[in-house]
Length: 330
Length: 308
Ligand SMILES: Nc1ncnc2c1ncn2[C@@H]1O[C@H](COP(=O)(O)OP(=O)(O)OP(=O)(O)O)[C@@H](O)[C@H]1O
Ligand code: SF4
Ligand SMILES: [Mg+2]
Image 1 (spheres, rainbow over the protein chains, first blue to last red):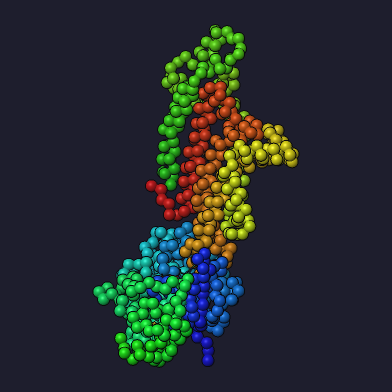
Image 2 (cartoon, chains in turn purple, cyan):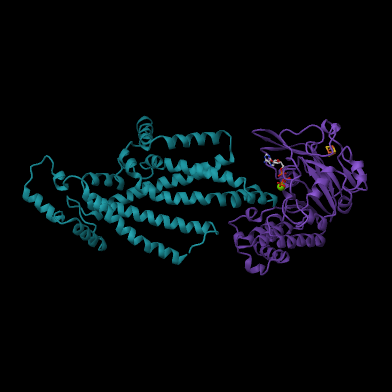
């Protein structure tokens, strides 16, 4: 059997800080296949961005470490891969789009050069041909008059256009895996839809595997095929979008779904489930969600952590009562 | 940008008149009679003193003296000192010395301020970083003249690498120690500023993007971290160049360097208004131009800056 495009298996990431060790990711596990879109969902601080950065290999080595777990890309182990080799994959095979394109683009280099850089550095293109290709991708992601705007700087673009430039830069070399970390959170509602549409279109065209990190449950339903719900650096539940919306098997997922505002499903951040997200310096024993879970019982408060168990086809939940929750439906 | 520059230059005209007037007035208000000061302890013919007063317009009311002086300047006649030396001649002797000293200091500042700043940032938390932070703290805390005398004693007397005073050995030998002393304070600031803004850049979103693009570390450092973090440093250095010219009074005094700073000191003591006003005015003009150049440079370095 060929390995999946990207496999994250029992990944742990921790930061050593002045206050102690922050365990940001604690056993994250998921697969991504060619051309598939998965959504990683979870409250603020659940470790979504850290997981993405671990895959990209751009965690700050001074503070971050990966004590255990594995990330494989087409079967090749990325954890512990020498930086030189990892760098060759970045931008070419695995690329990442960041949330705030204004701060994520270099303010003092014109946008065209920032896109062209991909062709120059990775493909060794000449200045002229890199420019030509950059203008092409910029046009392709919907920047009007791309050739004229090549020399403009990020601050001269609207938020949506800046995000398109970011996308142009990251899809320039047709990566096999594209991670989009809340790509639309900083944008207006109408622009959000356009950017999502663009990402989806590009993905269909190139067969890229897309990891969409988001708070926006509305977006998830229309774009992703599978969902991974994260809490406290772990997977709480994962499965196909339709199955999970119809029959969630984890109290945390139910909390998230219930918290979708009815009137405006596209409001940026999820309203919180009562209680605070976990303190990662001092994670509770047992199920990390037990402090806030309405269904929690004594077993939940003591170790071990509930394992991911299969409740339906390709549908798993990490809850001692997964079967029951699943059986009751929503 | 051209129109902006022209407007800025036009704005210098009132500043020019304001400064000359102010300095002239201050000199006029200094207590004591300049002519009598000149001749203290000597037997002098009152007729001669009167002649000098006449010669230098000292009997006229202040405003007439000032206008007379301005008239001279506009025809590039900066006047004469009491002993008859044209001020222009003094300028020709003194300015090159001070400019050489200031430029040498500036060179050290750019080279070591930026260079060590980058090094400290790259080695954050390591020995060199700590050394540079402590070193710059000492330089900032200790008065310049103390530093100057210590340097003079160590390099000029104890080690004997250079002559302790004077410029008889020419550039660079006679200039390097005074220039280092003159540069020390700004160098310390430049180092800290470079280190600080580079560290900020390392944590910025655009540097993270550059890494995510898979750019080689050298490219990330040059085109992303440095390119952005040097903007405030360049601005600081530019403004500082003018300060170095004027700030040389103490250094020139310690090392007995016949530059403009030393002249300024002597002339203030002798109430030689024409010399003082001339020097200060030139300093002000240098300062204004340096600032203009910095502002224009800022626009070149940072495309977000717009001139209106
Ligand atoms: N460099 C770091 N040093 C210390 N702690 C860090 C660092 N980066 C992230 N963390 C911690 O890791 C945890 C997870 O952060 P992460 O950014 O992955 O959350 P997230 O799920 O992306 O949240 P959000 O929705 O707000 O983006 C946070 O508690 C954060 O404080
Ligand atoms: S294991 Fe217990 S605490 Fe955790 S989600 Fe299930 S019911 Fe809630
Ligand atoms: Mg995040």
